[in-house]
Image (cartoon, rainbow, N blue to C red; front, side, top):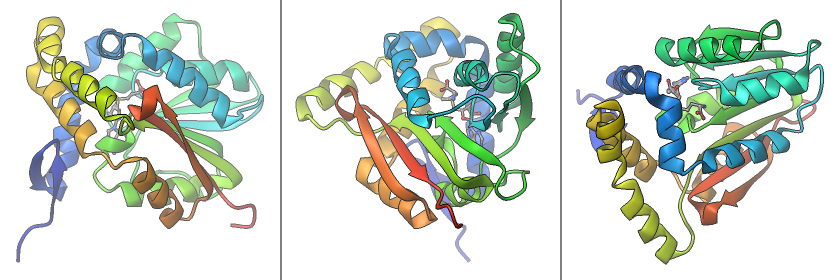
Length: 250
Ligand SMILES: C[S@@+](CC[C@H](N)C(=O)[O-])C[C@H]1O[C@@H](n2cnc3c(N)ncnc32)[C@H](O)[C@@H]1O
């Protein structure tokens, strides 16, 4: 019997190996992740995340999961919105990213309404109907079985709850797409210079190429059972924010 495979960047790997390979990438980059994020996005990820937070419509008292939350920059902002009556779970599959996130939040005086969980988006250890909002920034493309993760997210959302996914996507204008691809080809070399790790940033470039375009991802949201699915293109579609809602009666 042939083994089922999936993509890891441009390589095909056995499905059972992808999560460990992705883990290797993020263990390796965790300590310099925030610096590299600013360099690679020229700071624009901060504005994109601010917009994603607005689209969550999060309120004081909400229960939120920042899934694949890594070093926790979304978590920090959400913690301030939900306040002491609310709760944020910073969830990531990778211990190194989570531990950097926890240090950063504690250094910034955020505690009390944040908890930390190491878990895979494909198998979330929560009861059905638990969260008001789930955010996922630049995480979904790394997940092996995205359709499984989307169904699992839908399950743990409360009826009327909302998923907001910020991810790289496909630039609409061919000229912008070409310029962006030339810029992103520099990332492995920049990664080598700043972190000493070329290969992890090569994976990041390739994982962006392999990620579904806006309409395909929107259809995946609908197929998983989300309603009123929509997206906003950012930077001409280099990135996009997808929104899906859980029906009231579900
Ligand atoms: C590019 S980082 C994004 C971190 C943060 N959300 C941000 O925007 O800066 C991707 C994160 O996804 C996490 N991740 C990858 N696969 C995952 C999975 N199956 N379940 C949960 N987290 C995952 C990685 O460990 C990593 O921390």
